[in-house]
Length: 526
Image 1 (cartoon, rainbow, N blue to C red):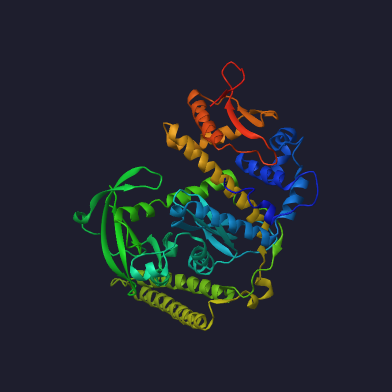
Image 2: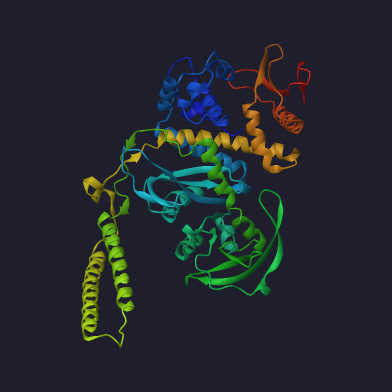
């Protein structure tokens, strides 16, 4: 249902062999679901057991799988396939596609094939070499697509160059030009991002395209009086309702654009400020969207832990676009020298001010005092002169230059993106499938937060596979889980899956899910 095989035959081809396209796609999806994070880990998985899942006597060995992936991961086909799936996911849920979360995730690179530019990694609080992936997700954390770059131009540049043009093309049910002209407050879609995307100029630029943006106010002006705040019932995207103390004002941001500023008052008295160009929704709905950003942060953490999105898929490198602009190394060195000189100057000023004149000093001590003051003053003069020269050189040095203009020793190559994009797309499909099942079983669990862990347990639980060619069924008889409540949730999920009447790929057998009965007799069907 999430499109794993829907367009595989249209975009990909394999030479004649024992393992078909369907087998390879299914195997990669199963690996993602059962947390086999790399091809190498497949060495330690029972080949015969895995083969039964594919309807074969064994799964391919690691070398064969790598060769198949290498053939499939042609850049053009992978990009077209991924874009096609993204469009279909949006069309299948246009309401979710109308409110999108955009954030960057740094994949740190520890290899020696190339010296990628350094960037700040918030989770490690260090500047490390790597590639930045910009993910676009819906309110429940489900991914639509990801854009990767080895450059450090930042979120705003990627939004302008890559993400916004794609959203304008792909997001369904956008208002017509007539509807936009009729109502000046109607927007095409809403983008939500963190403080990295805060820019009055960018917000104004996006509103010219009638794209609403929401982010945290980077420079809020003082606290508002507590009397302005009112309690609101805010319905969150996952369905539950929370109470928030909210207040709203209109502000002229950057002397360019009139925006809504909405603040949330916490129990500790802290005020969190949000700016939005979404003019048609209530303050509670805007706040609900903004404070659901944690769903994307949770997505990153979950994908790192369970789906290995930081894993290196390919050791190959390719030449990046040499017309792209990068930070000038000479400018960066001047910046470092200026900061170093400024720090020394600040310390010398403090040392100069700390030396005080004592009236009881003898003539000898007075001479020492004057000499020391003079030496420090001379050092200060030298440092000020050097600092002024460095600042003048910085003014004459361009901050950004094209990649092709870098010295040969400073140039870098980017990691080949096709294989990573191919595997990441399959992982997105697997994650969306897992999310759909988790949302299904959540309805019968006392604690909704247990849904994902239960689904993961089901993926890893042993089962009997029973084909019946006369009735044209393939029964998946699941063994018991850890407790009765989990068994009941598995039965509920089985009922939902059986209702889809899914045919196992490559066969004419309908899938039937059951749970083994307590006395080990043939399973009950639900």
